[in-house]
Image 1 (cartoon, helix red, strand yellow):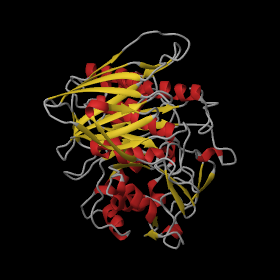
Image 2 (cartoon, helix red, strand yellow):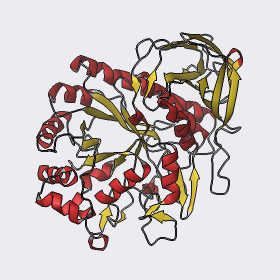
Image 3 (spheres, helix red, strand yellow):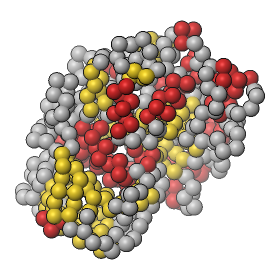
Image 4 (cartoon, helix red, strand yellow):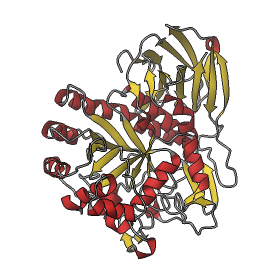
Length: 510
């Protein structure tokens, strides 16, 4: 972001923790200036056919005793509406490259039952298909991000799905959609051509995928005004090769490149670390791993700036979040994990990173929405609980489509000589309501932070909003204790602004 600068004050590095006292942080805000718009789709969600993410998490069927509207559970729908979910990505993930759309349309009792080979080897009834997905996003007021099957599908299959969803003509496919209950075409905001083509989507080389992308994109035809943004399957973690090859070799029909990065406390896929019951070393390891997102985005954006100097291509982080070892006693392939205050801090740290790069990072999707990985919501049959991550999404919704404001942040480090991160990160923006908002995150689980704030171009004396924190690092909400971690009212004079340890604050500057 033009005008934003973070200065890390390095002093006293040793093998022990860098901080031995409250952090001293200064922020200079240039309120009369403006940066890129923080696109609402940065707050997107991801709903894959995985574990109980769709079935029970979202869809229970019309005959379920769980209160529902047309099969969609009412409590989940209302909770997602409350945080203003702007976008949902579906049907995967790895599942997308084995999904054949025709198996998910028509009368449900006639749809084939398949095996979900990626996630647990369980039966996939196809009860939740194209029409159900669009009904769901319309219920919660979100846009649709559909991921097409490049890995095991064909050009014809993908092209016909696009026609089925978007055509307004008197074609056989459009009439089939009408027969299945939808007269008007569906609206698609984004369409992904394959997923993780370097891995579960086909183990391809980027050069080979680029050729396939051009071929498939050629035949994705829609009526005027109905064309979605087309998304290429990009790289992950420290990799920049996919961004390099795709941006250099695809000259049309590509609006953005996807990117995936997960926060594993240990950085070891064989033993990722526990969701609960961790110590301070694992808290620090988690923060250090998640903060790599900033460098990885910067490295990829440098490639885009070289190959796409006009800035036409977006960089879409359409899978991100924490990933821990499976919860004992549960099906490992369902990727169910608890969600603690640590996850809430990780979420806010990443939001602040995305805001810094809002010029190109225009869409992200956390993995995943319900019951899978870093979920907003956990369910157990008729019961539902909101996670700390959910509450951060609710607090940060004021940043959707807000205009970023330049600021300079000076902060010390939290960590030791082996691993360290900024002790405090921040965001500043003018909301669509015209108000000036400040977000602050204290990554240190033990020490508070004193904030010295200088505001130019506007006047304010107070910060009024919400704070999320708790006594324990792994404080979490359960079905028996659903409100252990939830936002509390926050109010402070700007002359006396401070952050407790391990906390997230979003406030209006008044």
